[in-house]
Amino acid sequence: MIDHKSLSIYPMLKLFTSVCTVLLLCTTSFSQDLIRVQECNSPSIKNQVDSLKSLYAKDGFVVFKEASITMESEYEMPVIVPLKQGEWYQFVFIGELTSRLYEVRMFDWNEKQVIYQKKMWGDVDGNIISYSYMPQFSEFHMIKPVQVNKQKKKNLCGYVMLLKRSKTTVLVNNTPTPAP
Image 1 (cartoon, rainbow, N blue to C red):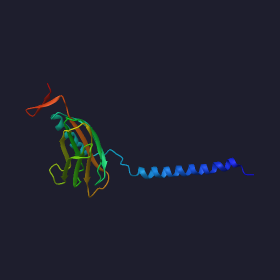
Image 2: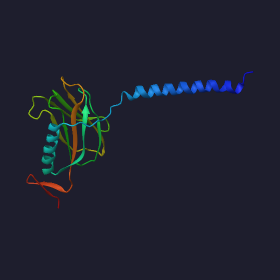
Image 3: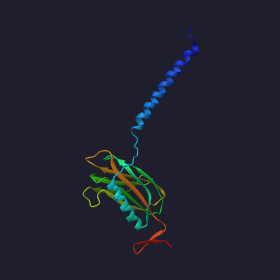
Image 4: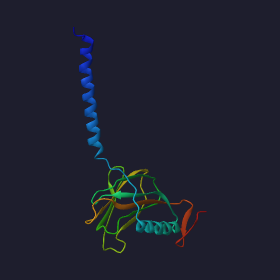
């Protein structure tokens, strides 16, 4: 004789197994499209970073955010930062010396492009893009650095640094001094 209770559990078990399999496959396929930020280590970029930190510190800037990032050639690496109205910021992107092209685009919260800079390999300071910015509104901004390298497509080293002008420092005769 067939037990009706055991028959009713079989379709439920089959449905549960099917749902779990579909969820697992979906999770696996979506996770392949994620950009995972990984640190990189480049002694030449580290030297440039240290020099720029010293240079900007003399002008009254302090490091607000910074990160070394592993990048792929021709792929933007979006960086989202909160900026405050009236504050003076300095953004720096340093790419690998062997890359041919470096670009940085900055967008405000309304997705309006507020900064665009491009450097080529032959430029004097070709692998460094640096610009000042004072936002009109307190809001998040998205910064999208990219570098193009014909020799190396993956595992490119990049460094992003956001510095903020210290409120305790003002320029007097082009010299940073404590604010009154």
